[in-house]
Figure 1: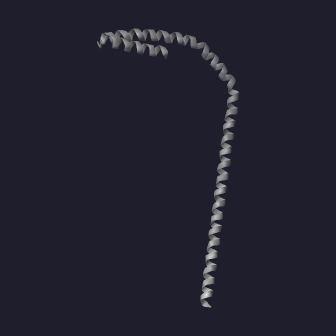
Figure 2: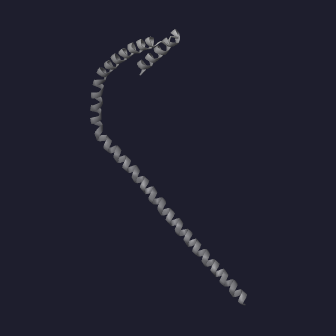
Figure 3: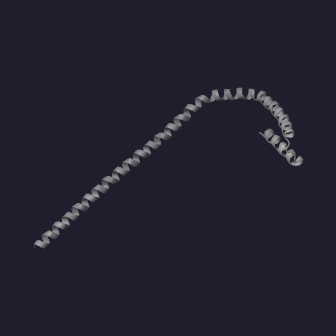
Length: 122
């Protein structure tokens, strides 16, 4: 990545210094830089082959641990389910309480109305 940034910086600096926008200059600069870049990438690929092998070995070693990670995730899901169930139960209890309160209030109102009617009759 640093190499690529260097290419772009050199190219833009050259354009700024020369103030020449002819296509020949651009074409030559880009061709040379592309060749250098390809060469650098090829070197990096050769260097990275051994690293990739090491990474594969590490991945093989880590396969046993990935299962436990999944188990942890399932545990998190279980906690979420428990919380949802508790919330639902609490909401049901609240609804029942509300209904009971409303029923009690209605009964109280009925009793008051009946008492008033009785009082008026007397």
